[in-house]
Image 1 (cartoon, rainbow, N blue to C red):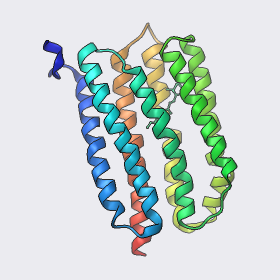
Image 2 (image 1 turned 30 degrees about the vertical axis):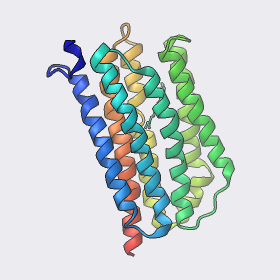
Image 3 (image 1 turned 60 degrees about the vertical axis):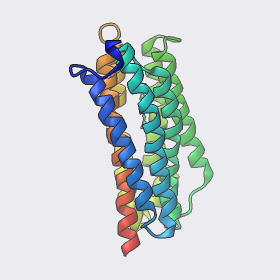
Image 4 (image 1 turned 120 degrees about the vertical axis):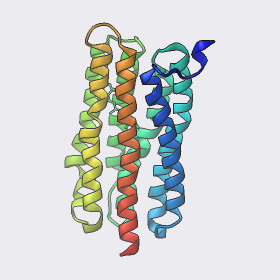
Length: 230
Ligand SMILES: *C/C=C(C)/C=C/C=C(C)/C=C/C1=C(C)CCCC1(C)C
């Protein structure tokens, strides 16, 4: 049973380990800080904590799976994403609601549809139900719907009109544009170069999750703390 513990030369396994601990630490931090900010910001911070919490639990299983089989924990990965990405979409609305801006539910539904198209496309491609490149195209269409909505849609107009959330909203959407671009890169290197490469794929996805869940939460925390002390 050599492979039931993390080995020193298993670099991808080490990234699984670091990200899982990072997610737990971020969760404790966000829950604690949520009690410190003013009441209208609490929900946003608690949702940031839930995102890292859900990821932390999944990372424990993914890490175990990787260390044992040296293969992609596809099902755990996608269950994590299907829960945490919609929560991140909700965050765009929560920060607007916290400062009293008006946005309709339609915009949220469009974001949710984009999220589901992106994740279901990626899952079907990775799990081998459809050819990898078709999963990629479907995933890119879903991501484009999300980008379209947060850069040109209703929520972005509401944010532009409000001084205290504008910078947070801008930073969060840059994460969706630039930070999220790491995932399709992982998919390309993992599935579309030369056969399947689970090491590269998971190393890149782990880095992406670290940036896109922890940094994303820290941006929200930063506006909440500033606005609470103002
Ligand atoms: C916390 C988890 C996050 C923010 C996950 C985000 C995942 C993506 C942005 C995935 C995107 C993909 C494409 C744009 C095309 C190829 C397939 C995916 C699913 C890897």
